[in-house]
Image (cartoon, rainbow, N blue to C red; front, side):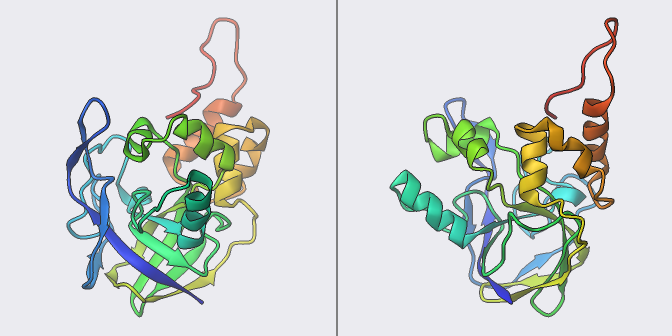
Length: 225
């Protein structure tokens, strides 16, 4: 049994040199937060901002979770404090192997909320601008500790201290780390992602495009969404 050590929501603010609006600045909140399955491109947590609806939010990225243990490792590596929510995560967890979670894994959070693991986080320029670490996208990619996005199967409330129990693990072995490496650094792993039927439709389509044979007259596979 793990637990939620912090529930974090973001407000729109400019991030990076270009000052683009983002909701990555997530701050811990004390009271219970309602979590629902977004019908469109919004986030799952009430009052949590999603500014870049093209790349973030929506049913398959309704909630983002990152382990406090992994944040602590990054603190030692970077030589700086990282508050809960510092990676833009909605749920900071303890006692659960988030990056080792499988696509389709079910999490019961508190008494009512049921979440399903969908896919890993892919680093972007906003994330790099927010952390302010030179070469951050390369560093984060090399570490392959991406955390997990989740969809909401049963809405409910979440608060700091709620228990987190893995109710079901599919057993196919397609973890967040395997999926992350397949998508970013080790394309030989891409066929393994097709073993996970719960993989989001958009991500599955990306995998199939990358695996499709190329012809001299046609374009090659898309590298990144």
